[in-house]
Length: 103
Image 1: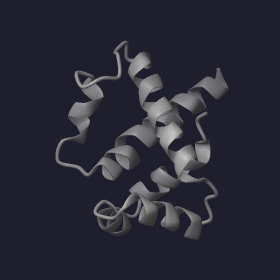
Image 2: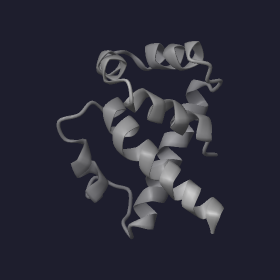
Image 3: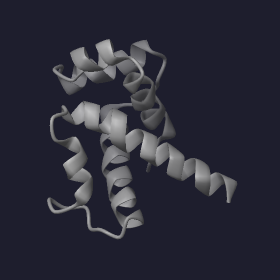
Image 4: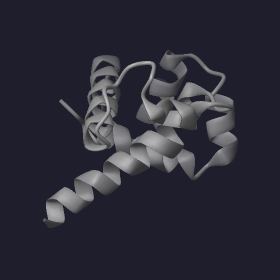
């Protein structure tokens, strides 16, 4: 299940470059702790399932399989995985969900 709160947390994180830089080098536990401290209520399992399902759905939307040949991975080069999620995946997913809600 995709939890929009995970996507909102990442999107908010993308707007704070200093915090994103620091957390990009942190453990997942530290990132999740920051999410809780920022008022977001989700656990590691929810975070993981949200990100995997989101990446799979976004790949499907562009007509690709989510594997190592997926073009979305090209947008990750030069970024931490967290930065990729915050700056590429979360905004794309929120835009997709928003457009689906409006349709």
